[in-house]
Image (cartoon, rainbow, N blue to C red; front, side):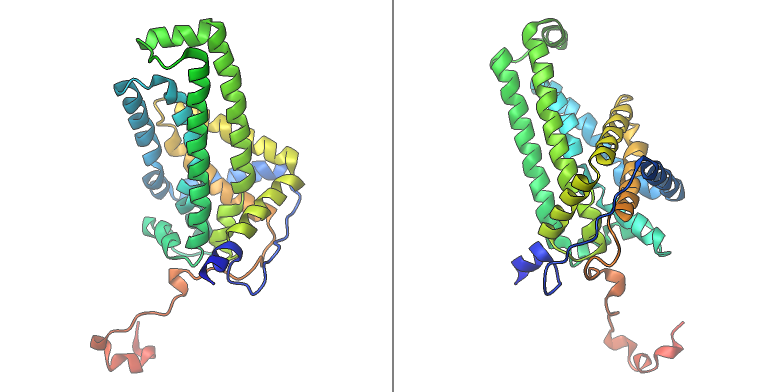
Length: 295
């Protein structure tokens, strides 16, 4: 039964959320709302996403320190493949602000107590597997062109990549394969995680709904993917520090994109902490018998 709930949610039968058609004007609107959310909750957003530049710098240091320089680009670019999982707290803050509820940083972690956490975890593991496959393939592409020897220095590595035929083959093939992975992750995650936060529909339904959303809006979603990629690139240039702004804006905007694409009432809402019955303690007796006396 638990496994069934992870796949199809709490409903007695799998739901099929309505998927709307959207246009480029809607993308401008969701980005505007994402910026508005960030401006309204800047401390919370940067608190949640400061890990991006920190992890990026750590990845760079790890690469330089262990002579696995060829994996720096795949690691940094592939980190975006698991971005939807890291942005869960941002979706939750946007959801709460939309509903007029508190948006303190602590509420970003309410998702951990959601009844949809099993489905969210399942999709998160799927993205981690995709990320691992991408890194392995990127390493295989490099090895096929340059062999197993490590670069002697950063200068030699850049020279080999930018000025040799093998280097250009690496760039073209590597980025082509990376593009396929990016399209795959966009297709299965563009609305799936926000949907699981909003409705207890299960991992299978959320994944299928995301695929349907991309199939119904192929051009608009392609533009959205380009926007995400371009903003992540811009945010990564100044030592990844720009990601402290770019990632929160994109995370909040993704929630509003979900609202544009998926119709309301798509299955039962998940059980969240604010919906649970308040705990009562023996020390509260007998005041609990007179709840109207509580302020």
